[in-house]
Image (cartoon, rainbow, N blue to C red; front, side, top):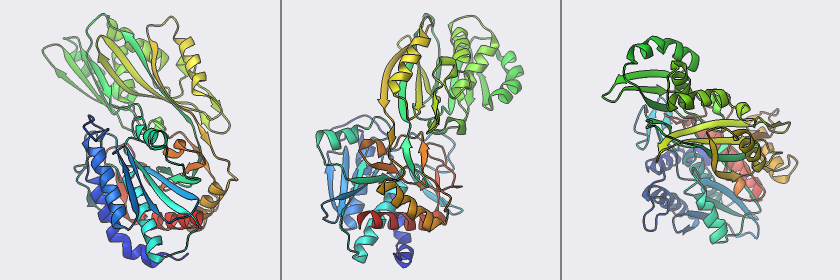
Length: 458
């Protein structure tokens, strides 16, 4: 189907709508009446549904947990799942992440890639199909959640409490092209140790992000030693380091590089860097003991070898291991860990290995959160249709379905895959500072999603 002219005519409106949605700070916050994930996610959900209403779609808001927008009346439904909440922004942005700006052809703002931008593109694709009056045999339903970045209560509410019927086939534009037909299991948990001494230590902000920054209070009198070892530490860890003298001691601050926990090798973990530095000082006390344990059992390894959980399979490769956060709360030091588990293993198998290997150590296992792997066969109608569209439009006939470690809404229902939106060669800045969308990619996004939705809904 030739959509070229409609895509060109719609482009400015598309950019305006993306900027409007991105302008809403939708990081999860304290719940309020009628706003289960805080004011921001509720406003963003309402904004998206408002854009859908303007496009002439039928919408419903499910108590600000989730919502949907429908076009068509077929007995079968094609689902497009996405979310309007975003991860925290961190520091060092080129602009205010919630006042999106276009700089050198790039639209900067939190959520332009993950996942507001792609979901607005899909909405505009449906709008174009509606405006062109193209006959379709299936209903198209855009399903939008407001709690994807944390614990998916939005989907639990939509499909569980409200018992909405799942679409027969679906995709989510919340990963990479060409297509992910399988996703590793997501296993999040905490490693906890009780403290006898007072320790000031913190770093990172979420399970599913590589910790970008960390800090620790060291004993007084270490300034000279820290400054002397900084060049060695920076070379060994690839982190940036600063040191300040305070009344209570020496404040060591470490900065790494954020990335999604599904691809920890793309980041530089500041918590691991900090632990290396503390262990290298060779001090007495609990802080040094913990750092030495950390470097022996975790260190810079990204597959869990030191804890005996370095599993792998032919379909999806190796388990990934990410320390997303360290904090001290109520006399306990807590490490928040994210594993992406190969698709032929259950997360409980990893837990059993982990608990066995923690026996006799000072750390214990707590608070598991499990999302098992998914798998859609390569020869299914859904996968073959989407792959055909991608290959034809991009002329990349060598492209093959992939397996990913990311946790997308494809796990929320049967027969759903992650389809885009990051293109090969396009910087993957999801969960990173200075997240941007190259505006010259929008036309290609629109061509792919328009054709894909059209073919699935025929």
